[in-house]
Image (cartoon, rainbow, N blue to C red; front, side, top):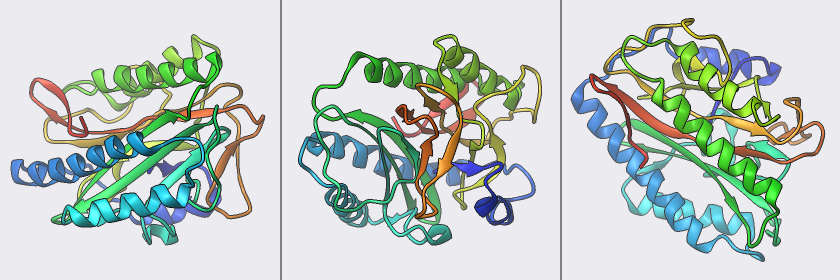
Length: 267
């Protein structure tokens, strides 16, 4: 679940709930985070096996909540800033923060699922976009490019590099396909709080921003639109959609930085 840069409803709330400084995690803290990350990894693995035409998004949410609780963890999103569910489920032109309900998936949809867990006081955060049945070539390309954007961003998260290097890698790859990079929504530091410093935009310039150091932990999460980067929020005050109605995809990993480079905890 990403932080917000410019959306009026959240910019004060989120900034008040993240640290003023970038926290360096101890090995013990990273071990706890790794378990939280494993749980959300496993949730999405299990959900992928039941995503199919005809299933409702509330059924997916119920399954995920039960799974997380059975692992001795707590759903990380439910109740956070007032969000009412365990999963964020976003279909087709919905970018992020869709609320689970009675809507049933149909063949040709794509669904982005974002899930968090809290284990022993530490968060894990993970998102993937899945095809529902058979999808068209445009949606398939969007998913593939967004997934690669995430990997390219992660590769830049090395000691001595800067936060802007992550966003630059994501932006340049996405825009080379003519896709829009959502700019109001960002990745973030993660630890005892879901949203910690630093904010990690999915765009930017090389050699700008905070210096990346060993022991930092990030949730990197490109949100890439097939068309324009413009978005709007639905009347539920949560679901964010593309303005032009074209589809959007979202992938996210929780990572830690060690001396050799980035280590993905949600893999």
